[in-house]
Length: 183
Image 1 (cartoon, rainbow, N blue to C red):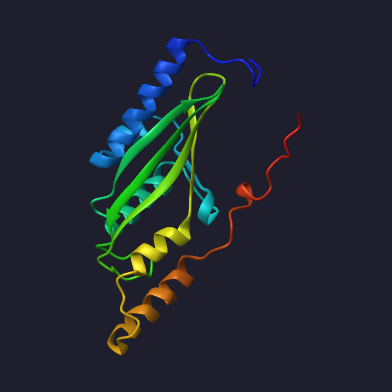
Image 2: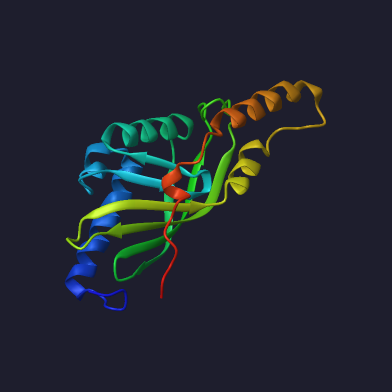
């Protein structure tokens, strides 16, 4: 199969069902169900150049994000198919109720538009969820409730900025050393 060949309708429907089941399991926080959608869980968060690879690492990612945003959910905007992927545009929503790394809970809601590419291999196995989003949009919403004119709010801002610095780590080289497209 080349990149110009689309799979048959049954394959596309099976992929779509798997992806929708994956989304549903994430909202319900049914991690075993989500992880069963791919034999080797692998997330690539392009905005932060972070990879979560393998069962333990992905479960830690789920735990950390749901501690920060216990009500995290989504609204699917559009779902598209390609020869080797399902591409989903969606809104991710939640409320910052717990620490996000070193960023203290701000109590602010967020709504960020995202795109996730669910990549399938030649055996129709889900091998990766690659997520694109704008971190600045999210941070503006999370920190937007701070009144910077009030000096009593400044310590919380400093803690948030220190926490943000702690979240910054070396980019995963798997997301930097990518092959160049060859037509």
